[in-house]
Image 1 (cartoon, rainbow, N blue to C red):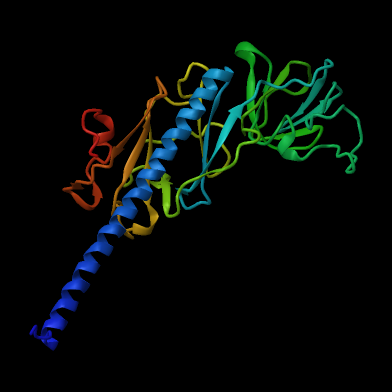
Image 2 (image 1 turned 90 degrees about the vertical axis):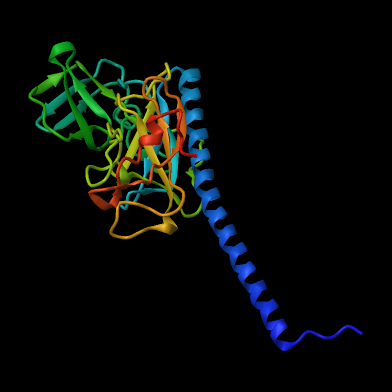
Length: 306
């Protein structure tokens, strides 16, 4: 006859089962963290490749906008495109006075409506500001060639622009154009990263962070634009773009390093090609709160660290 288990044996068996269950949960948790970061990097690579392909196909600058709320953590991106320069037509003139440029006549005003047509909310005239052909962040160019002057638009009405800096030119001129900045691509939904995954642009800051400054030309506040030319190169930078992807649930406060899987998505500015490598997490011997050279694997295509 088979004897029953003693109480001690049952307790030992339960203890072993609990230890094994804890190990399994911990392994699955770590696997989930890694999958989240790897999945985010894979999405970013795909979005970058898509933007570059559109630039090649459509023969105009197309790219991605990385935006954050001031904390340096990008969790959502958007496809953007740069439109052709804008002129209102109809031989308009522009009155210049310091940092103000006022449109005098022409076929269209800065809202894209026929010049002089009154506002009409029921149509609507003018359309919402996000659909105006001239927007905040665009650049007004006055003159041509060596005499051209450029200033960024910081506010706009239907007939007047306020500029970031005044132009030395004054009076009335017919020689002007608006160089339009990048716009969100029409009809494209936001590009969201997995929960707790983010591109940490704090890491692109100067020491004690790790450099690899991102292009900001024409981008809104707290944003970075990565634009590809019709030839597939990256606009406004000659340095490799490094996007640090990590799990924000594994922060290590008061340090310049992070737990878990950390990946670098790199974009070659000359070719537009994109790749992923692991952050080299070896510590700086002179400062145990930061890494010695986190981009080492990203620079060496033969050693991704993965």
